Amino acid sequence: MTFSDASLKYTTTLTPSDDSICYSDGLPVLAGDVLEDVEGQTTRIVVVIPTLDAVPGYDANAWRHLRTGVLVEHVNASGVHLVHYDNVDEDMELLRRAES
Image (cartoon, rainbow, N blue to C red; front, side, top):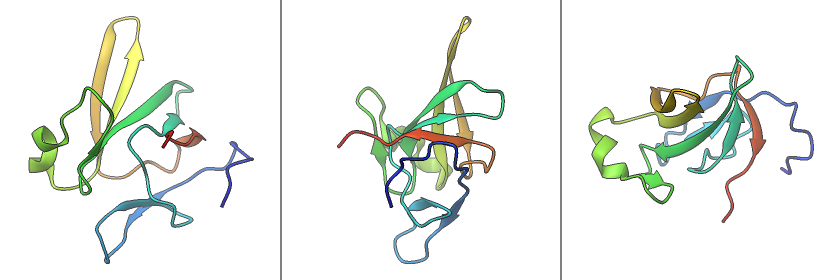
């Protein structure tokens, strides 16, 4: 699937074959994916815990004790905040796929 329509909303599920976290259409969540949260703020997936996929500057192994979910980077006037989500919330909108 291509992402020409950024207004689509996605949810995630764990796939039993490899424990990767996927959007509702089956596309895997990647470290570096850019999302818009329910409050309209742009966020970025920095770690996908089950696959130990991380963007440069983040150590996925430091978060493996959480066993599942994603670590999302929120940047605002008070700094950078990291939030763990068990799944990418259906109210989060995928804006841009991670660059490979």
